[in-house]
Length: 392
Image (cartoon, rainbow, N blue to C red; front, side, top):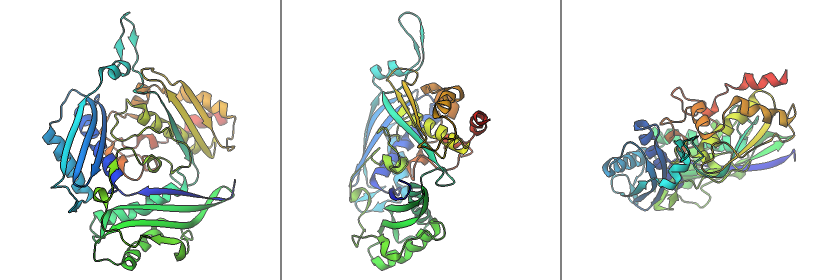
């Protein structure tokens, strides 16, 4: 179909699931800052006035319970939770982190086997991963998820800066975009739910957030008021973990491409880059973005698969959705020549053994410009010229 409507959703950093993602990634960053070779897999759950940490760690350093509790409280304070049912000072923090399984470690770590042969570092688990890029937006992201993120980010920034003190840290935005001839044209409906103080009427909430919608969308894209639904239940005072429990990794569609393509199902947050759920997904975004930016296709989906303890991918797949300018097999054949897709090769190429993950926990892992300190390194466009060479 060339003419259709597609919908995606984003959530704010105070959403219960996103609190969990950020806590997991903040603990990961703390380990990587002290030990770049640490293996970490942290899962978090939150509910009324309680944070539960679970998972496994293998590291040269050990974080005390006191240190981890301090990390949790500081993170929740920064998100903005000071409500009766979830306050950074009063929450109970339960820490059930333990050492990594030796059975997993022997398949992941580089080592010398019983025959004296050197074994390369293997993947941390079996699984499938997807990456994507398209020409919908300047960030090479699909328009629905890009603008859902942008609307909430503009609101969230002003809440954090105390310019919207009447609004709370929990919220979500769903936007439907009309496509004409395969290109995004305008929004057809927007659903925005946002936490607010007790003394605000729904009309006041609408008056506060309506300008942010207009600011985030291109000129002429805002749909009629009748199709903009703000707090459609009529009230959103109780938010965050006091209103709903949260878990790490439960917002994968928000984290990736808004449902525009498949995703492998593996969570990213709380996992160090030896876990290919995370690192290989980043590598595929990096490759797909460079392929599209190089003009080889207008849209590109890539898939990798791995086996636990196996050092190289089992399969590599490409689909340019009938937009490729050259045979897709030609692009596929070039990829392994430009990037080593072993777990170690990905980490070295994108320099992932650094504390750069907390920032990914809100408003998606894909789309932002690369940071000077190496954050979002998978958004670089440094392979464009090499991909362009096969056009000549």
